[in-house]
Length: 515
Image 1: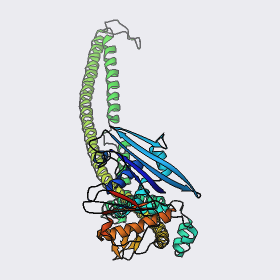
Image 2: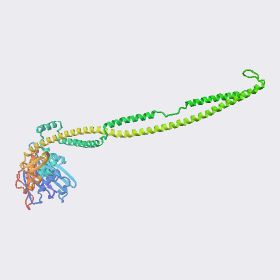
Image 3: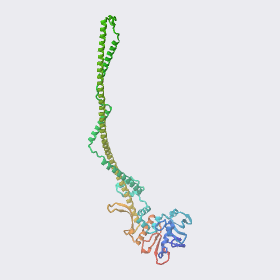
Image 4: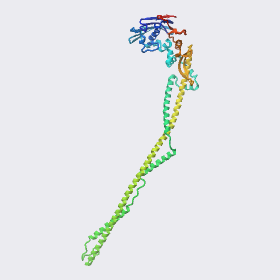
């Protein structure tokens, strides 16, 4: 790329249109505040709508000339491809809040500019010495990724061959199309495993404390047998078991029935005799046919009376004996009722005592069984813990193998990068002071000093080297704009178009094509 022309109007110090022609080597001079830096800002704003620091938001109010309603910058550029040079005029116009872009007079969009000019970060890294160095100091990951993305890809097989055998074996099993993505995935998987391990170890600690039996196993087994015995005793007691003692009333009932039958028999005999007609003189005996005399009739009458009296006395005796027998039956029946009540009362007490003992022992055994179950779970958790630790360690080893690959890749890349530099040096990794472990990093040095610690002149010389590096690595030829060049006595001239801006006290702005 070669910038051959710039036309600026309504931009910072340039209220009215100013035109500048440029060659391969350009000297821009003037006093402070005359517009030397403004030319570089106009070019970057025209190309990308940004300032020299790459800012696009809120910069226009600072870049526009406050006395004009329109800001316009046109930059003529020669772009070469396959040895053929083509002229393009890039134009950016801002009116109020409306921005218009044109290429060779035709309306365009930023993507059209980028397609011809390349990415903003890359252009600024070369065109503005210090941009890339500041990025490396403030955003090292961004700078590193940009530089690495520009480098030619290395043959993975050649990099892997430089690793130890264990790392080589692990890399063979891992998808290494995108090592950084693989590393992120492994970190995520390891983090999940670490979280699982924390949970498992928490379970182990809980189970270890709560699974310890306070008795020998034999006591637990004896109590389990005792519990079964108590349950059987309760079941037998509930289903039947022994019967209460009771007086046998059957003989008394039979005797009572016999007395009743005898009483009824004698009473019937009494009634039969009593119902017979009284004998009269001349009556015949119904049994033998003898005819009664007067004396015999009287005698027969007395005989009947005596017989009736005897039967009556016998019936009374039977009644008294029956009453006594009834009283005995009642007494014994009441005793039987009391026996039954007392029996079931005692049986209920036994059942309650057995049930209470069973419940107490069941509760105790349930707690013990819970601890035994915890002990089984504890063994399982130990096994799971060991397996998880092994899996985590394997993934840690895989991750280290990937990191070793990336570091070896970076080491090979940095050798390639630094081959284009003179006093400047780029480091893509560093070694930990305590462990000696090599980790990814991004640092720019100049004569062994980090970029952030360099003087202004050293930063300019370092930045010129870096601009040349980026041009050569990318295989392009962006121009370099060296501002504040008066602070640098000498520097390695860029191999591309460049601009040197110096301060000449109280002098007007002047541009000169040196070559």
